[in-house]
Image (tube, rainbow over all chains, first blue to last red; front, side, top):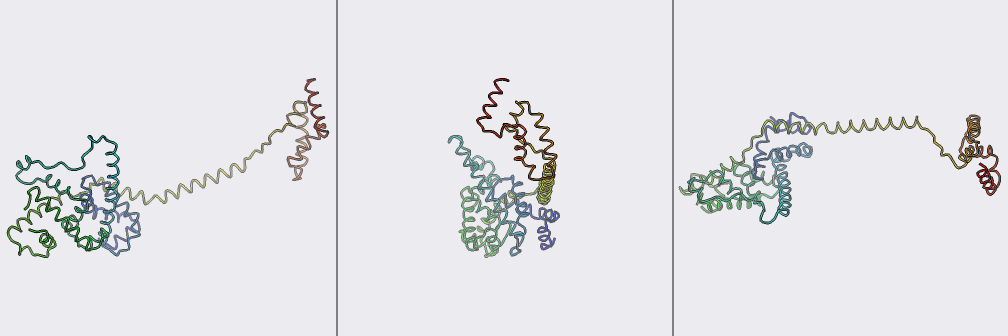
Length: 186
Length: 163
């Protein structure tokens, strides 16, 4: 569908436009949210993104691509969700006894598992990836998986292109180091 | 492979053909990790979640109209209430000490009659319909309040003792 027509429909609060938007963008936004938050249950966050779109679509001037604007909303919703989750975790951690603290880190990979598998398993790799920060995961997802340009990423994150480049450089370096640590590469 | 070179390869600044065999192998492993990461992040919304999201949007779309309806309903109820209470007001006048005294003395019924007659007689005259006028009429009908308060006390106490 023509993006201009879609935006027009969204601004006029037409239900069909939101249905088209959901069909076209929910999988992409959901995967970005998943990569950032690092957990599977992202339906509520995706819904929150669409509610934000409904409320703020009149503010969309069309300077950037619709997808860039949607990604930006998704990232902002993720940041809000994460800060809420951190606040809740802090509260719970304060509440619980120190010895009963819930570990938020994924379980470390075991040598036995490596020997049995002979190759890095999916879960093990995910443990490596989860050791990256949220921002690093997001940068790698947007650049190396979704293949967005540096300019688009800079627009989404509201940061200068130079900053994005340098942060992505460190994110890739960190991922490479983590993969080397577990002997996957190098 | 050093990090600078990896970044340049990932940004496609260095063509894959120019890579050494070891670099290609390392890059292949790195790319495999990225593909696994991509698989992990893959999201396919269910029909149920789509329905939920669309229903939420529909609900938000009709929210202003629903609020407007609620406000209109409140205004109609308010107007009816004001109209009802304006047309069905009962004027209640607190019975004063004087009225109670008249009842004690047995003048109560006579006073009521006189008061009613007086109200009917003076209905078209605004000033005479006031509370002050009614009280002065009651005073006159009792006939003993025009004298001094001390005397009234005496009268009352005297009556009470003989009662």
